[in-house]
Structure formats: structure tokens, C-alpha cells
Length: 255
Image 1: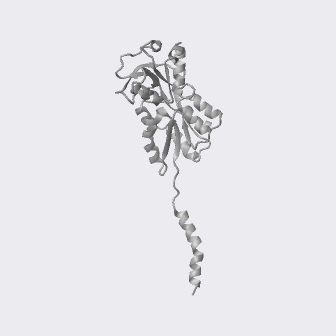
Image 2: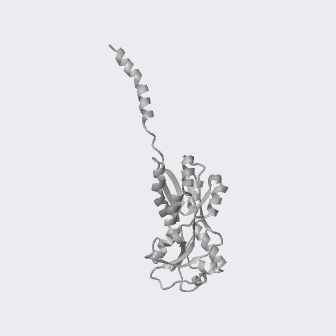
Image 3: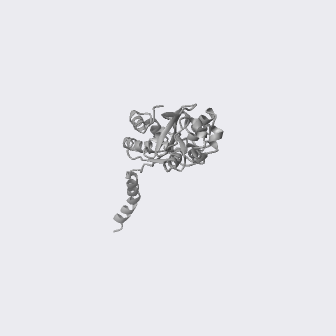
């Protein structure tokens, strides 16, 4: 009378194993650490990539490129790194944190000076920022924020870095510079052209600033990625016509 029961018990492990293997695996998020200036464009890109890669979701971490590099170097679980400059990505490559062969430039930008929309003080050239009327000028930290490095280089070329530095209000990212100007807390600030477009009712562009090196955005898979194939796919996706169209909508130029 106990034989059927014993047979059923013996079959339980096999049944359990079959059930477990039939449960679909849950796809992990792909974590992309990207420069703050890419925030709006990348959020707009996400649905396109996710629809082409069913079951996968993009998880973004936006901050200054230098800060993101430090996080990756300390072991943060990141799959793709997108920087606002070549120097930061060069550092990542030198530290063997990214797949150098899969590194690609995918967008270009421009440096501009913005002032509060209601301001009557509008510089016509960089030397004007050394005048008394500009007492607070927001600039990204040159040591860790790419827009700050571009700014410092441009001001040095114009031979006014030392004067403007005395009025410098340090910012942790280009978006913080934008916020300072939008709230009228500073007289002027240096941001990318794409950021200036975000608040046309609160800031206005005073001038476009030439830079010694083109402002190009590189992206690369992180070597420690848990999903290397998907990370490479995202970097390649950034170069496709649909992705480039979204970037263009947000003011980025082709690299």
C-alpha cells in the first residue's frame, strides 16, 4: 500500500528540477554611467534600445565624467561608460577599465557662455568676463568636470583665466552650472550648447566659445561588465541612425 506513495516521493526531485528550468530567467539591467550633459538624450534613447532588446532595461547613472570614472575604478557595477571628453576616457583606458577596441565617439557638442534670461549684463567676448560686472561665474571643476577643463583651456587661450578664476563659483557638473545661472545665483556660466537649450526661458546664450580640441563624446563597454555582449550592443546602438536622430533632436552633432 505504500509503494505508489514511495514512487511519487521519488519523482519529486525530478519534477522540481523540471519546474525550475522552465521558469524564464529575469534579464538584468544594463547599467550605463554617462556624463550629466547626456541625461535627457539618453533617457529619450532608452525605449528604442529596450524595444530592440526585449527583457532588458537600461539603468542610468548620470554625473560628471571624472566622478563616474572614480566610481568605476573603485568597482562600481557598471556596464557602459560614456564620457563628455576624451581625456577622461583616456584615463579609463590607461587603467584598463574599458574595452579599448570597442571605444567609439558618438556625439559632438559646443561650449557656450550663458547668463540669466533677465540679465542686462551680456559679455560680447571672453575678456568681458574679467570686468567688474561679472563677480560670480559658474565653472565646472577643471580637475573632474570636462566642461570645466574646456572652459579653463578657452580662458587661458584668451589670457583671462587668472582674472576670471577669482570670480569662479565651482560646480560639480555642467547641470549644476546651468542651475546656478537659471536661478540667478551667478552672473554667467559655461555650459554645453545642448544644456543651454533646456531652459530657454531662464537662461540665454551670450556667446559660443571656441575650444582647442573638439568636444567629442566617447563610449565604451566596461571590462568588468556582467553583460559584455549587451554592453557592446549598446555602444554600437549609439552609432545607428535612430540613435543619432535622437541625439540630434537634443542638439548634439555627429562626431
